Amino acid sequence: MVRIRMTRMGRSHAPFYRINAIEKRNQRDGRALEELGYYNPIARGQEKEIVLNKERIEYWLSVGAQPSDTVRNMLRKNGIKVS
Image 1: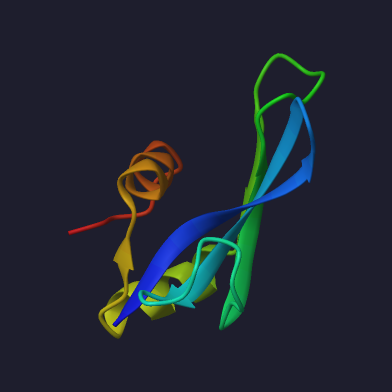
Image 2: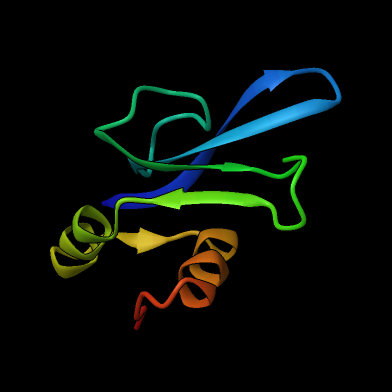
């Protein structure tokens, strides 16, 4: 089963996350099937920086990938329908 979840990158006290399609059994930072975007929670602007590849995310959702709770909320806020 494929999940859409975040992989932590960056350094201590400066997190940066990649949003990936990854096998459910793999570790959080394990090998991803495809990178779908990124999230920078400490961006300097007013809003936290989120970049998503909507076309590929919709593809993975259509073939049965399940987003994690955090990613599900992020997708909804960016206008991607999640069942």
